Length: 60
Image (tube, rainbow, N blue to C red):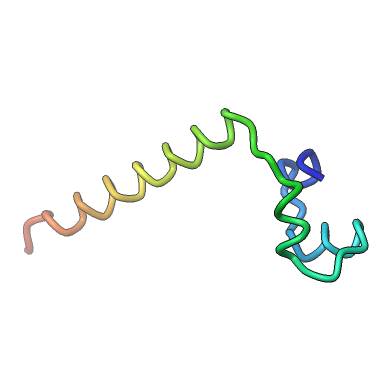
């Protein structure tokens, strides 16, 4: 399941593939690797940096 999730398959689709009744059950089987966790942190940092820069931009 983790490889499917890492490839971008949504949890609701994974739930159907696995035959689980609940997305919560499917999520128990998902274990992102360190690269995915690091990439998520970098994406969040970039988002905050862009938002912070936008809020501090001088008005014309």
